[in-house]
Amino acid sequence: GAGVSQSPSNKVTEKGKDVELRCDPISGHTALYWYRQRLGQGLEFLIYFQGNSAPDKSGLPSDRFSAERTGESVSTLTIQRTQQEDSAVYLCASSYDSYGYTFGSGTRLTVV
Amino acid sequence: KNQVEQSPQSLIILEGKNCTLQCNYTVSPFSNLRWYKQDTGRGPVSLTIMTFSENTKSNGRYTATLDADTKQSSLHITASQLSDSASYICVVSATTGYNKLIFGAGTRLAVHP
Image (cartoon, rainbow over all chains, first blue to last red):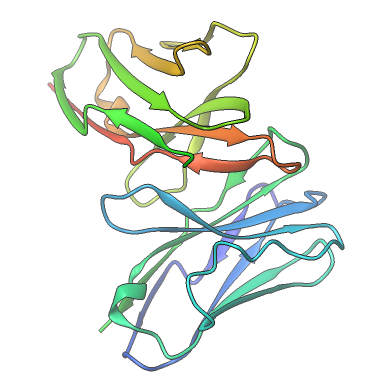
């Protein structure tokens, strides 16, 4: 596609439920990032995928968070047993080199 | 600790006026600095990218400066338009092999008619 596509755009879930967020990167982009943006705050790095290398999971805030990526295609971010503090916009970005980052529009997650 | 600080936190200006946003960083080792514009409900969109050797870079009415010695950058917006209303985010890349981005909290700019 022409850009990074994220779905759903909005998700409201009950506390304790699991949610799965999806990111479709730009075709050919080997690098994929997940970020979290809490209201009024800067983006927080969550996880980074580069080709077939082991992902950098150093930004994941707890073991309730996990992400998968098959090859250089779609990635899913899973949050288990959601908590209210998980409410945020989750942004995905992909790039083909060190400079060409393209962000998706994000998934706004609200945990009630 | 790698940090990016932006000021002001928010800013209101009248249409047609100029403004300057500030960014100070303590990221090391430094790779590059970017300014992004983020409209409400959208992902960030890149405005400029500068490496260590670049002092200034322009993109239309946006001009970014970088002083790598003092670790400061600014984004100057000329002849502001209502569509400039957005958050402007300073992002510094640390050279860790794959350029992990470190984001500032952003400056929220409102341009009023």
